[in-house]
Length: 482
Image (cartoon, rainbow, N blue to C red; front, side, top):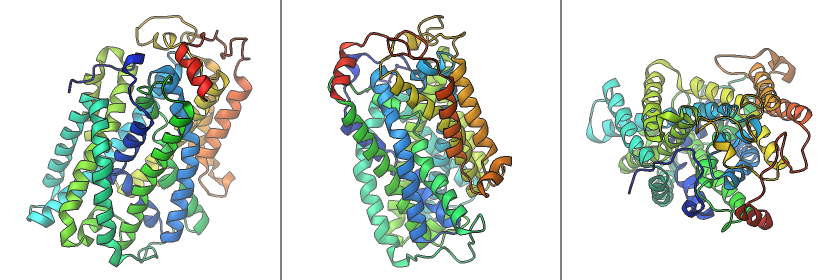
């Protein structure tokens, strides 16, 4: 299989051979991994029992999918990734906002997947083979997983899709075996001496819904276009793509997260997840757990790293996708080592997802509003102006930036950061919401309302502040199918 050379350039119609089933496979297979499973542990570490943990995760996931899934339709029309597509609303330079947000999201989740996967890998090898479980073993596990991940990410979309199809089946079997393995020790109450992290039930429940539930779909706000750009709007309707996205996100995130909740309760995991998970595993499940830690982590981190490479390629076009992927892999691995040696797992995870959700949500809302307003009609060639290191085009606006969209995002992100409550930072606006973290709601509302007030009047071609491109045959077919 050849290495994918394409970066964020427009995908030709002849190469758009994927379909909705592939989208479900990649969203399901890549997420059945410990990097997603560990989010099911968060509600338990916050002090919630089985019922409350499940309801918070389900509620957050449903809300997140409702906001995130429609973004898949943007790249269906533009044939490029989402951050580049957002140039239609933020400007061909302003779309760097999406690239940076996507890069940070993917960086954090890649590091998290390698971190938890490496910890479980080192723990299972120590238990099964008697290998030492110190820092050297963890470092070796992190390095091995990172190297395997780079291979998948560098080869690109086609290899990652094949891996996801295999993981759909293989990881489902391994997780089913895991439920049987941990079921005898399952309890419905939070581990002893684990109080509500925010002092009372409802603030803790809402924190769980955001940090464990909503954060999963929000992680895909810039990633979905990496896959749907390979789906043809001529052969597949927007409804089918949207349905596949909803199914893939909902099942792909909820199944592993609920597995994490059940196993965390069974293992009595409060302050840490990987160690108790390995210790509580029956002897017969240690090797399957090792396989799950390795294969699942490579599949998930590979997709995240692939997206990071695209985002860095979009920021620095001269780098090229392959070189950009290797660079971000080194950075992500460095974060893994920092996570193991310097940070508290729960605090680092919670802070990361809340902060990134606060700045990412207004970008997603503005992009969706722009997509609806232009009715899915884009000038695909004009979106690539920055990548060609050129100037001009219908999305040039003011020096490549659309000031109103940029200001709306900045205001929404600022309000979100001022209203966030993490173990490391509490914004001054948290008092207005009775101590409950509603940063993602406030950031999305403020960003969306500001954009609605400031955005330019739609011209007769249906574009925001720029002449709309005449719809192509593919766009006319897609519009007729919607």
